[in-house]
Length: 558
Image 1 (cartoon, rainbow, N blue to C red):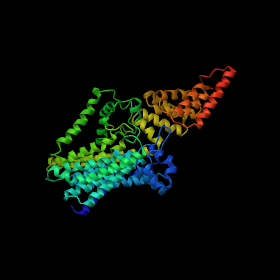
Image 2: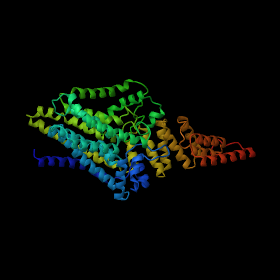
Image 3: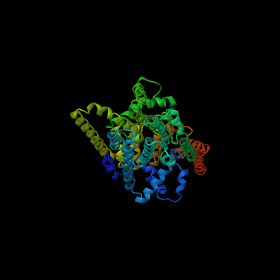
């Protein structure tokens, strides 16, 4: 095929990607966008001291704890986009769309090194219209996912195309290493590239030399990349604490789940990954209990997920020699999903659709690897060929339509959370997060109803309890606030979050002795002295006054 024809096919891929994502350009800021970008205007609106972002966390500190995550290049990219549009969401969304288009073309280029041309085109086309990508594309903060998918696709394309032409020179290895370093500073899961390179060598790279000799040739470049990864982890460790760099999903902590129970929870939830990758007709924002069951030891309910996981790994092993592209695609899926899977380290969620963007490249390669096998069986049957082409066209059209319908859901937080309740009415976090949005917009009655519904569904999220307590305190409703504060500190006795607000409410309820104990607890946990001393002084005066009047402390609202 001529170069012009190849560019024509790439153009069709680009148009499919554009068709599936273009209507997200009118979205505003939603969900995490509000915290990372909109509510961090002071951070976003200046480029002064930009180098300090390499020593700062991705998430800003909040009332529930210190900042976490480490993505300095992502923050710098957001700063530039803020400057471009004066804080408007338009440049952010336009760049997300452009990145998705370019990544889809890059996926086509990569797939051409792994699959026959027609199959490579199908893999890239499926990737371009896949509805599971809407969370990463239509939501601004998903930009880091798209950038990493782009950089990893280019790096893998450089490697596999280069190896098919012979051995890689220093220049190509330098380009791959540069893409690797950039990718990690955009988002941590780019670190998996160092495992994808030997995977490609063992599967889709045609070379009759012994495997040991081939891996030996890779030793020095991989060592350099390993040093880059260590350097990245060192810089990350200076900015944040903890193995994963993110606060683990609160449910794992509040239920005191063991590592085994966390893994069993994900085993049971793993059919969701397969469904989302192969038939994403139903999409969700919140994958949370009781919709997602939390494991309390082994059970028969985990068997389907276990069979799916073992079957997937079994197919990858069985096709290693017979269909290397299938094995490569499945292994790509497994390797790139692992960092966010909760199998190794606890993540900040159970399942998040945005984390499937990079793994879906491998999944689509594996799916399209069946095309040559199918074609051999329908080659001489014109009717079946037309049926297959029609089925492919229908699937691509359905992907575009589903993506276009889903993109506006991410227009703003209230739209998103109301849809989240429709998508997963049994997810407590859908109700919780809608309550947060409604409180922020001043709709206190509806916000309280959503919080109370979430508490009835799952009363084990301490930060949800703390958030509602803070909302009550802010509305001067200290009686229900104190009940919730007490529940929060029963769950998390060593946590200092909100202690001074708790003490203030105790004073409002004329319970000075308890207010004094809470203020002293704040000091013991390392809190500042100024406010706590004032509370202690106010509590002492109130106690003396009540004693002088012979008035007992109140047990209800003043």
